[in-house]
Length: 157
Image (cartoon, rainbow, N blue to C red; front, top):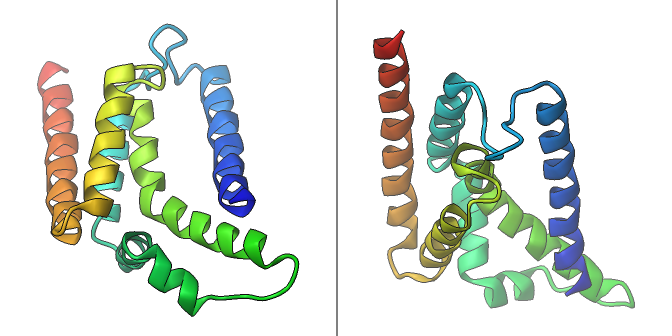
């Protein structure tokens, strides 16, 4: 368990540092905690959507959907074994969700509705029988949303 928490804690530190750097550069709104430049939001949407189609996403999602099988295959022994196995599992789960977590910069880091929506989506993707297909459908939807945002930005200019 502590290895799993360590993986997500490391990710949280990187995300917090990214937020701080973006805020220092004036790229994140201090009021809404969203990306200031609409183009960056569109790029994050498209990037997260494309990630849904990568072999890495598929492998990580497969691991997260069957953690008992995956942990059995990667079984370790020794005093550090639980930590190492938790770290491995946490890393797979992180590989599955990091791009979706980046969407918090689009919808608002402190927007509880956005956070809840992403949490529900991640749970459904991991637990529903058709989670792999859902990941690809979401990928298409995210790319379309990013492209639509780009069109809207270009139209307004």
